[in-house]
Length: 361
Ligand SMILES: Cc1cc2nc3c(=O)[nH]c(=O)nc-3n(C[C@H](O)[C@H](O)[C@H](O)COP(=O)(O)OP(=O)(O)OC[C@H]3O[C@@H](n4cnc5c(N)ncnc54)[C@H](O)[C@@H]3O)c2cc1C
Image (cartoon, rainbow, N blue to C red; front, side):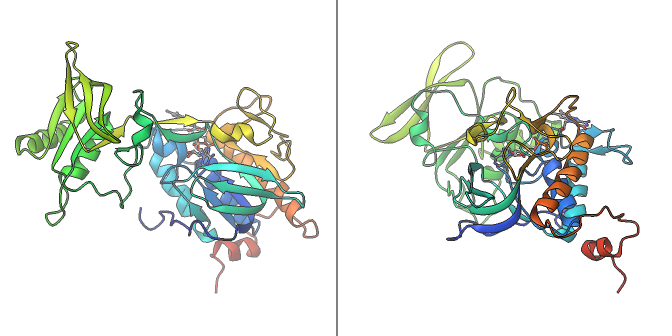
């Protein structure tokens, strides 16, 4: 769905981005929050750790069915995300993807100073915490000393600027690792390929579709890729360079695997992370809210979706949608106390039609 894919907003400006509304998390709650704000004439910026929108729906069950979205008898996780992106398009929220909100502090004059892991800064009058079960972060390989090579020889996500041409690359991990091997070993003709691409997997059997297994076998057959079974149990270094992994095979034999770069693809796990340090009251790692407004204990900060808790809370997408609606109304009253925030129907309100871009010319 390239037509509705979110476009990244400019990052790292010198001045903080001043905004009426900042949404932390681009899962279903964060996306629908931007919609409800848009209906009330409030533009939103959205930040997510992932490089794409969708939260759990896209990351954990993109191709699996959901049956309990009102009016949509069936759709996949990714289809729901695509539909939400289409729905918020008229309000053109600014997306700041692949960056984690690391700091949030209440300002004396009201609102919040917010900063991300990429240095993007916001001065936000209201903030909507739609952080779900936490920021999706790559699982690390648990080997002593590996952190020293992160970003230089050990990668969890490859950015276009990470050039591995001519290098001996080891890709370690799960099913997603196979995709990375294809991307590295099947680059277009003119690209300079890595010198070698080795897939390191803990078992001899790969969990993949027959088509993808055949594609990998073809690459191994042509010498473009190799397969090695085992687990990384140690590192060999020379000076400041990582020169080989120590790989222990299922028979407990240890062999060195020489390399220039290691790409770790062990999946993503949610991490509550910095949120715990923002001065919010937390109950079992969740944020208590007032169910009339979805306000937290910090004035101007609302929590919607899986991240919040209240008596009777059900961690369902439809609950999140309701929460976003009430939070948007509460925020509108806070942002524009002199403007009436009356309920209008999208069916009949010419003002909403104008905002949605569907008003007749
Ligand atoms: C396998 C599975 C099946 C499910 N099936 C259904 C179903 O059929 N029906 C249903 O209603 N629900 C279902 N759910 C639950 C549903 O997915 C969640 O209720 C929903 O995703 C919650 O949405 P959310 O936007 O609150 O959080 P999430 O979807 O978790 O999104 C939160 C986003 O916030 C980001 N984030 C967190 N912290 C930060 C930070 N500090 N900085 C930047 N970004 C951050 C995360 O990276 C993430 O993308 C299912 C869940 C699972 C795991």
